[in-house]
Each structure stands twice: as C-alpha cells, then as structure tokens.
Image (cartoon, rainbow, N blue to C red):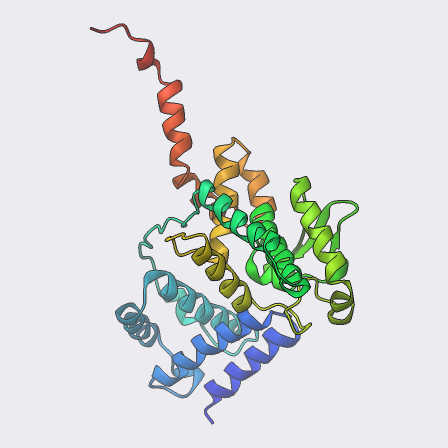
Length: 307
C-alpha cells in the first residue's frame, strides 16, 4: 500500500474519531478520496504537484455537474489541509492553484400550497375511511409525519432520527440535531399539527418506548427515509397529484412561504439550521408571487393618470 493510501486512511480515521463527523459525511469523503487515489498516477505524497491536481479536477468537470465537482474538491482540500497541519508536506499544492468556476443557481422546487392541502386532505380522508384499527393507526402516523415536515421545514434525516425525548408536546417544541451535530429548537405553532402529534404518540406509545425513536414503522422499528418517500408517493397518487413530491420539497415550501409572508430571512436561517445566510438566500430567488404582489401594489406607476 502506498504512503498516500496509508495517510489518507489515517485522515479518515481522524475525521471519525476526533472530528466526530457523521456517517454520511464520512461516506462522502471516503468515496471522493478513493476516487482521487485511483485516478492519481503517483503513490507518494511528496510527488503530488499542482499539475497533478489540475488534471484530476479536469476529469471531474468532464464527468460531474459543478455542484458535485465543488464538493469533491472540498473533500480533497480538507485532506491536504490535514497533511499540512500534520507537517507531512513541505508545501500544500493547493496553495498554487486558483480554482474558480461558476456554479449554476438551481432554484429549489416547492409545492403549491393548494397541493399540500390536497395531500393532507387525502391522508385525513383515508383515516376517516379506515376499516381497521391498524389502518387508522398507520394513517395517523402518516399525517403526523407529513404535518411535521411542512410545519417545521426539518430535513427528512432529522425527522427520522428524532428521539422520543426530543419532542416536548407539552411545551410545543422540538429539539433537532442537524448537520455537523448542530442543535436547534423549533416551535410547533399550529394546534392541528400539535393535535395529530399527540394522537400519534398515544396510538404508538408502546412502540415508541421500545424503539426510542419518535417515528416508527409498522414493525416497531425506526421509520426510514425510504418509508417516508413511499408514504408521500402513496398519498400523492390517491390525491391524483401529478407533481412528483419529495420530502425535501416540504422544506423548500416552508422556507419560501415564510419569506413570502415577510418573515426576516435570518429567522428562516435559524429555523432551517443553515450555518450561513448565503445558503438561505437561495429562497429569495423563488419568492416570485411576493415580488409580483410588491410590484403590483407598491410601484408608483399604479398611481399615474395616463390616458
């Protein structure tokens, strides 16, 4: 095994044991760095030059979209920063590189509010029409899941990892563990959402106590993100909704709806758990209905008496 391979493995161990990165981040690092090790032509850390890195980055651009390339370069930069920190390099080859490229702005996809209403109505109708206690329990859970995604804008991974103790229905707040082990609290501001969460907890109390996760599947285990995706597809079909809805679209819809209601973007940033306001600012591009309303009602041209 080359010294580059050994040192890269040491870095991944460092990320896991000392930086305490989550499994998804570690997996992404491992994939990106393994790809680099397979493609690079040298085997010793001292032989890596800016030219070698430029050639590798060039191959990435041929194969991936700019956002993916950006992530892979970030993984590689972090590795070389570690090498520099450990004084394994005389000079970091990235210091000799200027890597700037335009990343296209991809607007987040939102769900029209009337479509969210139709989707929720389909779940509650299924609950009312349930012919067995089992069916009733499942539809209560499904309603609680979708309501919470829309009410809080939390990520699907955050929802599926919620523990029983993370949700305080008496005080109406939820403790969310986000990316990078960052914690945030968010309020449950709607009485209907609170009611269905209480109803769900009462119906699944035994399973929740045994599993410790707040949301459980029909077997009593932790609810997975794939189960939530299947759940959404099921009710989308029942409601005859043609739009393909993903769990993350509820997060986008949550943020955009609040922005259009004149909520300060910094409050939205905090509720979403974004580390930087620049990430949240993507939603300023999608609030077109608010822009239309402003330009229709506030622009001075409306008061001109021109014939």
